Amino acid sequence: MESLVVMDHLFGGVYHGKTVLITGHTGFKGAWLALWLQLLGAKVIGYALPPITEPNLFRLANLQEGLIHVAGDIRDADKVRDVLEQYQPQIVFHLAAQSLVRYSYKQPLETYTTNVLGTVNVLEAIRLMPSVRACINVTSDKCYENREWPYAYRENDAMGGFDPYSSSKGCAELITAAYRNSFFLNEDAHSVRLASARAGNVIGGGDWAQDRLIPDSIRALTGGQAVVVRNPHAIRPWQYVLEPLSGYLWLGACLWSKPSGFDEAWNFGPHCTSNLPVSQVVNHVVAIWGNGTWKQASGAQHSEPHEARTLSLDITKAKLRLGWQPVFSVEQAIAETVNWYCEQYRNPELDIKAFSTEYITRYVQAAMRNGAVWTAKQENLS
Image (cartoon, rainbow, N blue to C red; front, side, top):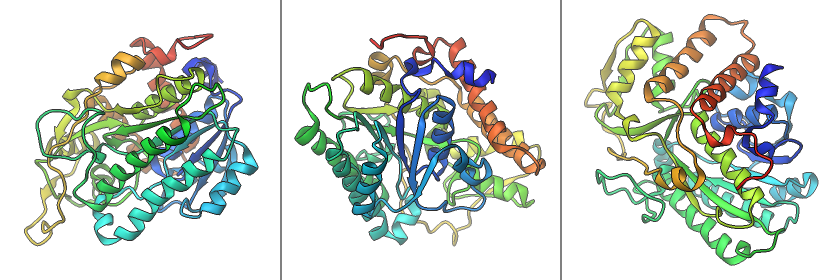
């Protein structure tokens, strides 16, 4: 009950009693967002395909009991529209996507139809649905045209993408801007406020996707094998899963409460000190786990499709205009992540929902100590 009391006033109390639709709630970030929204007192509607990994956080935490779960594909325009008509959501978080770079080389058609046409289907359904007041389309830091420059990318930098996944996310951003400019840009108090959110390499407990560093490391360590690392020198903006989610939730609260001024693109990345090479991250993982080793992929294994070597996000805009900034250091992010897996692996009877709720509560308490604006008790957002 203590966690519920702590949660009650977060984000200006906007989500309490609201009907919130999450697409992709069976995925890693979507499941954490669904759990947090439940704690905030929202009526959560989830629309997604079945989880693509086994195990997965959605089933382990038994999240289906706390929300309305609708199985469906965002490529099915009619079903997307039917779900919005049936449940009349007020706020929408669009997370459903094909989210893996290497998989996108194998399945480019699936990647583009899901990430591009799926986004069109969601936004078109919202355009026709008067109940929706705010929508956040969650894309990726990889939406930028990455020229391997040392500076961090800002929201007004060019969209692009070398690979199918990255370019599909750039396309999703352009679609979002087009729908906002064509249909949603007006001062009507009942109009839709549409924003997009771009995050970095998100880590946290409950992710078992293939070709991601932490899940791959945990699979190797639990199997007593060396962690195989493809690109040890690649630099990424590592961030704890609850960091961008706090940004999405705060942005959603601002969109709900204000008629204009927030319906734009936003970066929710870590502090620049969290931009670490892969090798340094896996060293932290192995040290926290307590045993194990890692090795670089051999020449045969290393014949991989192109992936960006350097990528980071400039979060100045979110700091100055939203008052949002990360709470955890990269060391804390890695520790919270690996410790979640350690406990889950070593305690098969663990109540994953209650256990994960403790992680949200601990993060919120840290944010309150740091004076995070979204933790303040506010009657009206300003």
